[in-house]
Image (cartoon, rainbow, N blue to C red; front, side, top):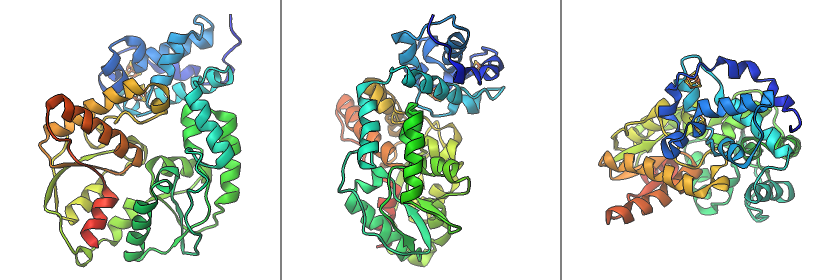
Length: 361
Ligand code: SF4
Ligand code: SF4
């Protein structure tokens, strides 16, 4: 029998909370793809319980199911007893990573963050430091898109935001969701040195960074769409877009940060008509990019992305808009795959800030 899963055991009561009703199966993007109970939230709860009691060994199949979870949190929303399956999965991951069960691609991301401060191992990704009234945390993904981020910063300044920019490092969120506990704690220490904050507001572009920074700093961190929505008045709109769009809610922004109203209000202000997908707002479906799945299983990630894109295409909207750089990338890839399947043109996918820039320029 393998060594005891002592950290996971702290969540034993959470595993008792599950009544095995199965309501969560119908919302889990992994179960909907693989069709096996071990791929469902209740399956993961059962496996975690088995690890705690020692009745199950962490074999390859079990480890695979634990790492396939996208951390979308839809099971938690749907569960009648509010079982925190995503937390149980994270605790299991932390124990499995300590036992050396992470894949090379995930170890490489952890190494990149440790050695270079960002997920891409790109030492060039930085913006000129500047003083300002609000601490802006750009995040690895946006930092790597220099041109669009320059525009985003200009957009904020046009709306009267004065961002303070420092040479930041990764917030550690990717390490947390992949289960790299020791590395995550070390990264948070580096973050606090690189991104010192006092009482000034903190603003971020990225949904994942928002959720994670709030935990790190123990206080409110604003997502950029909250700030923009408050400042975006009709006279700021130079070119209304007059487009029919559908909006994909990123899991970390909708179920994580409860921000569903602001992006829709912004889209309406810039002249967009929104056609909602079947699963929208707090019932939104993962795009296939969450919880480290991109570094664990690209095939399942691609299929999830395509399922989401098919839902978007079914709305008949001219374009898909989202507010997360990872969702944007996975949905763009999915749009190409769905278009190939249907012998049609890919539906354009935009980050909401890029659309906004077009409208107020
Ligand atoms: S967090 Fe999402 S992917 Fe993970 S078990 Fe729950 S519904 Fe499935
Ligand atoms: S919905 Fe909740 S109680 Fe029901 S099987 Fe899923 S995790 Fe268990």
